[in-house]
Amino acid sequence: MATYVVTGGAGFIGSNVVEALEARGDDVIVVDELGKGAKWQNLAKRRLLDLVAPAQLFQRLDSDSQRPAAVFHLGAVSDTTETDVDLIAETNFRLSCRLWRWCADHDAPLIYASSAATYGDGSHGWRDDDDPAHLAALRPLNAYGWSKHLFDRWAAHRVGAKMSAPPRWAGLKFFNVYGPNEFHKGPQRSVALQLFEQIAAGQSARLFRSERPDYPDGGQMRDFVWVGDCVAAALWFADGLRPSGLYNVGSGQARSFADLARAAHAALGREPRLEFIAMPAALAGKYQYFTQADMSKLKGAGWLRQPLSIEEGLGRYFQDFLTQRDPYR
Image 1 (cartoon, rainbow, N blue to C red):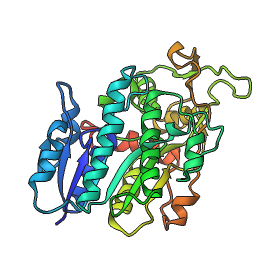
Image 2: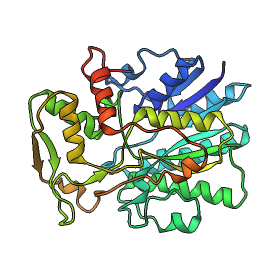
Image 3: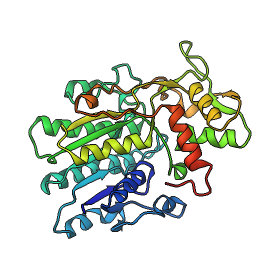
Image 4: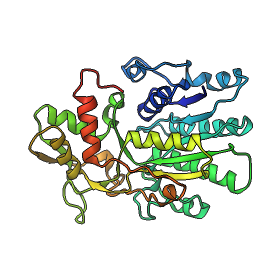
């Protein structure tokens, strides 16, 4: 039985990682804040070795004589509309730097969440290259993406300069993830869940109108990826001697929001009804019209898993979770 640390373990991807670790018999220390809402329900079925507040993270890590088998660092301020940049920098960058150093000093593998938001508008492509010159050219569109990019560059620089690093590490650039345990995210929950709520309530699927002539309304495209595929990738890096570095984790196939809406209707046995609404002013100039993970590096490292299509993923999400009395994993 191995022990793993999962920061953000009560969150969306984190709680799915915790479930997968528990399912194979491992012990898990979750580091997270539960607050006063229903976030605790993401962990309601889990067996935990410990539940630790983020402020007590390093005290808890230092209290164990045996190092964890790996640290999954999935905790972050992930709201792309958050305006407190000092909070974002402290949580997403400085805490990550400190955790990197701890893992390096204690010989613990580190798997952390980066983001497709680091690529900005995609003008420099979607290639998960660790080269400092390539990273320096990327321009994220919001403070969340910038904070993730800042840490990617910090980590890549340290490795390139042969400074201390964890024995194995992977920065996983997750694309548009959807799946169970995201209710607590409020307005930041996936479009897949928002579409389910709209269609199940008998409403039309609401999508943003396009502000660009090269994309029709609803034709904006994303790489939508099932959370189970992300969890499998995270565990794969933690379990084996994989090459360290930055890696895209997506489906490798961009699909339009209109495609997603039609798949959502089909998963619920409804005829498609689409409505197009104005883009919120807060997203003006900060909206990605196209994302698609270049998966060649991950496959080159030996990754063989075939990702779920949106039709398969939404079918599983809606039928196995969202339409059940208990929608949590």
